[in-house]
Amino acid sequence: MAASEVSLQQILDKKLLKECVHCGLCLDYCPTYRVLGHEADSPRGRIYQIRQVYEGRVSADDPDFRQHIYACLDCRACQTACPSGVQYGAIIEAARAVSAPVAPAEKTIGRAILGTVFTRPRLLDVFGFGLRLYQRLRLQQLLRMTGVLRLLPQRLQEMESMLGPTQGGIRRWTAPAVTPAVGAVRYRVGFIEGCIMPQFFSDTNAATVRVLSDNGCVVYSPQAQRCCGALQMHTGDRETARALARRNVDAFSGLDLDAIIINAAGCGSTLKEYGHLLSDDREYSAGAADFASRVRDVSEFLASIDLVPPTHPVNLRVTYQDACHLVHGQGIRNQPRKLLGMIPGLELVEMKDSDVCCGSAGIYNLTHPDVSIQLLDQKMANVLATGASAVVAPNPGCSMQLAYGARRRGSSMTQLHVVDLLDRAYGHTP
Image (tube, rainbow, N blue to C red):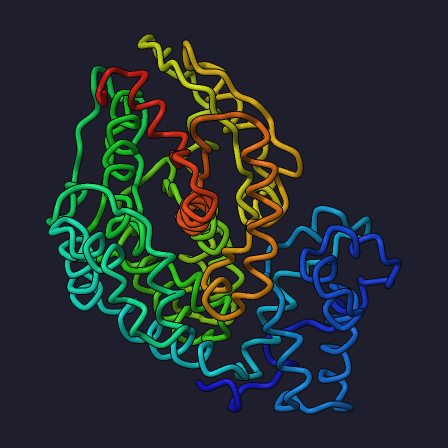
């Protein structure tokens, strides 16, 4: 069902709009309001506009409405700040489901590419293989050094400059269908590989499975799983997200799992919302709700169990970036820090405003580069002020954005995931 074929009333309960009392406490927490300074680009301003559409006073096709709705990062910092508990994420994603994006980049990247390449594993593998080949053969380094890339249109130059180094070899690591537990079996868990993670961060995926196995988990990773649908939801392609959700519910059904583990914050937030996403689907509503109830971010899960103590020192000074959809979308703030604190030799230095968006926000850095760069510059100033040699980020988009920010500043700071460090502390990675 296309955006024009569904109404806001069909997918959004009006009481969610009424929960906003327009107190304004969210304003200072909203990155786009802080950068743009427009009421229409604040959480309460957008909710007001969405209510106008809901009541038929403004068309969902109105260009001004669409501009302000898609200018939102969907970082959900306003949800954390809101004393009324307004479910802003559900509201903004419903609005995007009925209003198409305005900018050409949002239409081509947000709808065309995410709706085709990311829904077809073979196409995604071809894309990932080509990117890794481009880097491993040092073509990227050569083209950047010779200045050939300057012959490209400015927008393509900017997009290429955001490509950070991918992990692993030319062939990506793939999670086995079943990974046995080390020692006694304590848990049966599923592992969602994701779409971006295996292409860009395959070493982190491998580390995740090893760390889970080291902690007595039998890890199941069905080949039938697909992209979680998070990026599609953020860009308004609700029906594609629903189709992907059904595929994942089917892939993990019948495995009798204690938890379904994800190591990407943005994906985890959407996976936990499958019950809501498919609530009106008679065939899948119960299965989706059960699936969502089992989803755990990897740091959330590991912090909740009797963790096998890591014994190998990791002598690094690191800082931690709170991914928006982990801290604001899932309420997970202390668990990653608890795990980092258990690693011998590791020094964690907190940065200022660690829970403010870095400007990545899915594909926001591609569709709204001007705002994204301002947010990234603010973030990098705080990151570098810590004097850390690495920044820990629990989301692939954050990692790539921070790597881009480090290159812009001429910094050699690296980007790591919590499980990368735990994996080293268990003696797996030098």
